[in-house]
Image 1: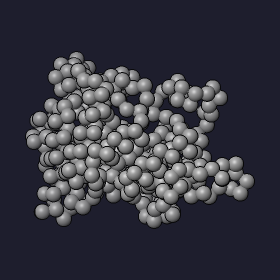
Image 2: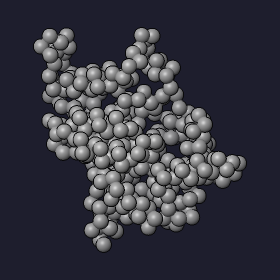
Image 3: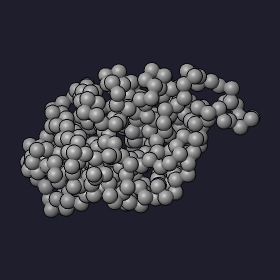
Image 4: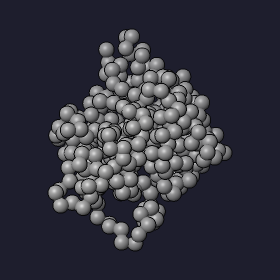
Length: 342
């Protein structure tokens, strides 16, 4: 039996707008995808928070989580993540306690340190000019957990404020990251960690193994749980997967140049006038993307599991066509079943 046969498989979807499509279609596509992977037996489904990006339809993971929870039956649903610098910790606690109250045992609260946008939009989100430039994430995290535990200093002005519903605890907290600092912080405070290898520049082994080695048990989590987020494009053949992945390659290339437009079609990607520098970038970026037929993808997943010791794999498949995306997840889940049988 291989590790692929036993680790949970999960999904991250950003509600990408595609060329020729609309924002509402992207949002509805995320809900449709969630229903599909729920039926397939995936462990969790996370949605993200990004702002002022024409390629991303949703900046509200709490709203999307509520819609997805209502449309699914068993899969865990949550934020991958709420960008805590953009929000009052009290507001985050309220919203996720409401979700947990409505769907007990099915909600995750993933938190990120970045604003998920550019500096001007981050300023507009906070609606004030005296915004602190220092990283106050840890202070915000402590405040968020204090709203849940009530462990305030005796003289703290917030200690008598109650977060409704008072008889519901916050869902499990995860820290998201693309750096070694995020991994160390998650280990220090004793929560789950999700590493965004699909876009991170930081060394994946340093982050994943460093988190595990430094983990300190807490009231929230007694042992480390590390999720590895990967881009995966799986199709019946290597050739078809490569064709579909053209959309991913061109999207990454455009974002590298500051163009965050809708996800292009494979036809647009094939017709793009790539320079040699462009092709070199795409080749390097492919270290973060698994592309191929079932056998090739299975080998890639096994390699990541063996080297990173991930407790869970979270897959994002930012291709142009929703049907091809759903099929990719179907094929990956079938790989896991095949490895169990083997």
